[in-house]
Image 1 (cartoon, rainbow, N blue to C red):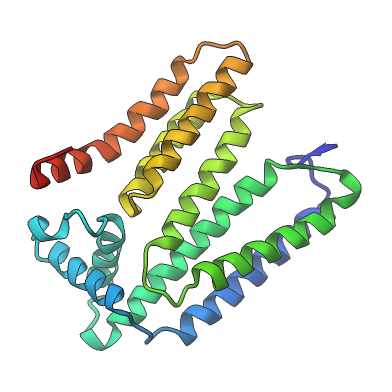
Image 2: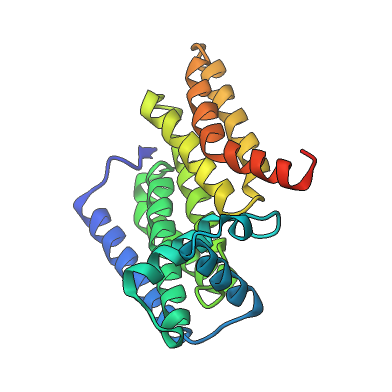
Length: 239
């Protein structure tokens, strides 16, 4: 078995070509769907407008998570887009999130251990499966934060694998930050965060090390997710 961090030049080239092809296909889908819009997409653009106007009262609510419309607001402000181009800006943001998901997959895939003689085949298969899942199951044409959630979960899974052989302080801190950002993209990340933090505890226990580093992950997660949880709890009158 060969750790994925030990790679031949041929395998690195294969990774690069696969990543470039995945990027090109993703860009094509984003471009062809640049004018496609759904009711959810309209709502996210409306929330982005609330952020632009400083209306946090409506931008933060119990139905729509804030990270995606906040990113849209930043993109609209940077581009000074007219209403005609708002859908194009939205799909451009989706494409950037797709590239982030590709980066998360790269981290995850490099932490896998595969037989040396099958590494090239696994690389091609893995990137093909990633491209299919992201472009046909998640899709860049759908104006939702799901691509951001995919990016976070792929990167967090890669970090969990890395912590097994490199349990660094930065790794545990990064895990908490990623999970906190994921929660701000979509609340479904919350139960996944508990599972991944539990896995981090197990890694420390199996290695017979002090689990204090996991508290860094928990602290980073609560620092990002806590204010939204508190704000929504106060607004709804319940936890």
